[in-house]
Length: 213
Ligand SMILES: Cc1ncc(COP(=O)(O)OP(=O)(O)O)c(N)n1
Ligand SMILES: Cc1nc(C(=O)O)sc1CCOP(=O)(O)O
Image 1 (tube, rainbow, N blue to C red):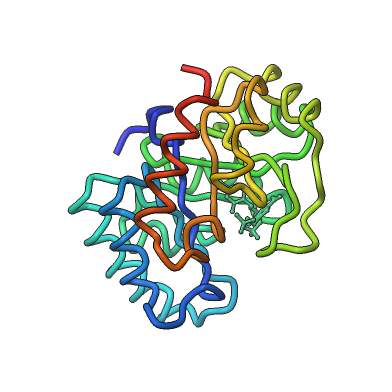
Image 2: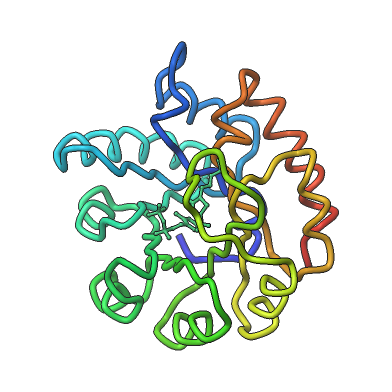
C-alpha cells in the first residue's frame, strides 16, 4: 500500500498490557471496524515465531479493512508477513538501513525527538515521523517529554507528516491544535478503553479539528 498522509489521522498501536476480557485480535478487530486509519503491531516481549504468527493473523484483518499494517521495530517480520511498513526508533536500525532492507514501496516511520533527527530521518527515506511524548504516557512511563514548541519546530523542519504520540486521549487532543501535526498515535486512549469503538469515534472526530490538511 502506498503511503498517504491521511493514513496518519488516527494511528492505533497495540500493547498486550491492555488485553484482558478481549484478546488482542478482538481488540484490533474493533479498532479497525470503528475507523482507525493505521495500525501498528507492537510486541516488545514476544518470541519471534509467535510474533510472526500473530502478524499474519492481523495482516488478514487489516487487508479486509484496507488499513495499513505497520510492524514495530522488526524488519524481518514486516517482510515475512508482507506488512505495509515498519516503524523504528532512534535505538533501532537506522532509517537508511531499514529503507535499504524494505525497498522503496513499504512505508517507513521513524521516532524523533529533535528537528535534527527529523531532517536526518526524512533524508534517509522516512515517509512519516512519530514524535512525543506530548503528554505523560501511562503505557511508556519513562518516555522523554517534548513541549508543544518542540513538536511545532519538528513539524516545520520537514516536508513529511508528523504523528504525535504519548498520553493522547479524546479529552486532551485539542491541546495539539496549531502544532502542525498530521495525526495522532494512540495506545491506551484506544486499547485501554472498555468501549473501543466509542473511543475511536470520539478521538477521530476531535483529531480532524486539530490536524493540518
Ligand atoms: C507512530 C509511533 N511513534 C513513536 C513510536 C515510538 O517508537 P520507539 O521510540 O521505537 O519506541 P517503542 O515503540 O519501541 O517503545 C512508535 N512506536 N510509533
Ligand atoms: C510507544 C510510545 N512512544 C512514545 C514516545 O514518546 O516516543 S510514548 C509511547 C506510548 C504511547 O502510549 P499511550 O498512547 O498509551 O500513551
